Image (cartoon, rainbow, N blue to C red; front, side, top):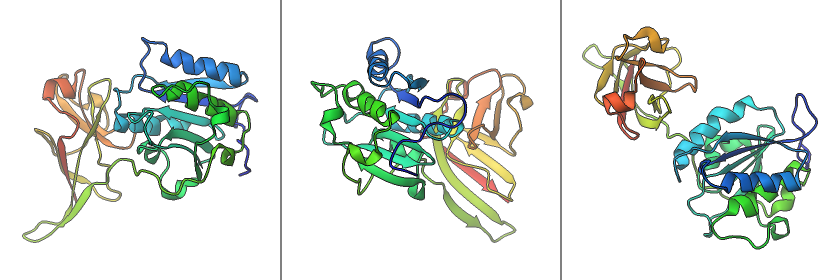
Length: 277
């Protein structure tokens, strides 16, 4: 990788900037960020990933970010502004990894899309000459993130944004707790996790993935117990719960033509226990 932002692979010669926020679409916030990008990087294509992240919900933002970013070409500038600490001493990080550039507050968000060795380089954003003036203490998305993203999309070397970032706030989906089962005819693996996300359909996404080479013996999610995983949502009778591996790779619980959250009372944080054999 050179010090300059790579152009996206595929059609078109302009850079791509993606936006993920918790700003919603009722107010002017997203439009203001896009206005800055249009003024400072008119050649850039701006793609909205999501602006309906639950307010200040870093985990939900991270899961949405992780679910979308892998399907974009290399060379994008991915911007996430879910920032409960806006205006405080929290850092803003510009990181290079997986062939693209990522811009986010240092609050764990980056850990959902870049982990450990995925990060090629990372810098603290400390470059006031790039910012809009005056900088609002409550709207860094417009005054800091958008102009810095525009500069990076325009070819600004990553290291020009500020000093190297020495330590980042950890983030990402917590790994499950594992316990090997044995004795009295029992063998296999028990894994414990939790519900980490409720999607727009009311499906409860868990922190568990299917263990390679093993088959499920049972799965408990909140009040529900499943002896096996199904392949599709429609494997259940209408209105009945079903467990399956979702498109994100995580095991989830759904209600066919219904909502697991509404009809089964499943919530984020509910315990999940799986047994594999």
